[in-house]
Length: 117
Image (cartoon, rainbow, N blue to C red; front, side):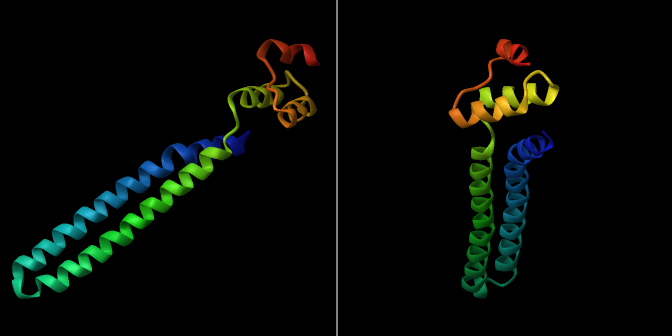
């Protein structure tokens, strides 16, 4: 059950944290590049190129975090299977029954969980 809690925690908070820090880094990189261009307008081409490459690398990390979000979200169990796992953890249904139902694609219903003992 702890695995599911950690997985849900990672799915719900992983992407927002990545986006917050990436947007902060992009803003800081852009403002620093603009300050450099304001100080030395003749080197604006080099500064702008370096800024665009840096922003692309920062954005690639956010896309990687989005990919991890979708992969981890796919690992979360379905609704009925989750209820069955919670019931099995609480002692209302045998673990073997939950595993068998999950293998067959059937979920353990709440009212059936107590009758399986």
